Image (cartoon, one colour):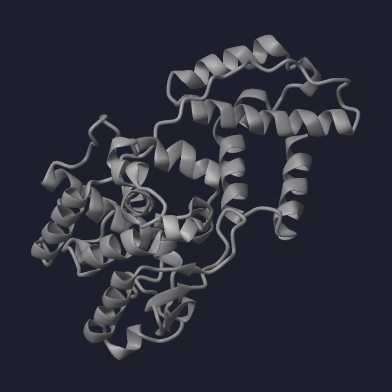
Length: 320
């Protein structure tokens, strides 16, 4: 039943209904805990009690979000089983209360600290680990560039490893910015427009990179590394070392920080400092939804931080 369900999901992914990354996550969940537990059992034997014990087992190691997502994967198998007549009805599923913790954004002062420290640490060695090649142990320019680019381009950490020069177009006019035509992420495929500082970072790359790394198919970050999963993990490793060095690993509410916190910062800074920012436009440009911004990003913005906007008044002449 699981194999049949997964074949259907593969066909859906091939039709473009969701990304290959989502399919890989489903495959991983099936292989890690679901199939080892139930591969030899008839689907009709899986009832509420079985599912409850499974949820309790997962809760010892995973967050409520992950437990809930594992149950979604199990449900996919059982829904398919009902559809093909292998079982008559779905069992009741345990209710998991999902608690979401917004990733800790950086304050402007912390952001500047990260940038300055990344620049000052260029060429210094990071602690040796088995996952980092000896030739990649020294912090490159790319770390400071990635920090500044993420905060001014609203991109996700996964975009750092896929972004190529052919995805970037410089636009000069009343406003100067980069138009990023990235591969689709989470069903969003519209171009992203950056803030002006991203133009400066991109221009800096052209001054520092050899010509071989400035071709249309060259990657913007760590272009010499062909294994892009390794490149993404390496940038995360460098950044984590930087967080420890600056004592910024945890936010004010003890949220653990990572590269993703830079995207959180990019959106939060626009909410706080963008003049009359339209949340729908911000959501579309960041390739997310208004609901996600309200739930995760705007959750850290207080009314007092926007006191000027709250106390502002419309111009009487404009009203008339």
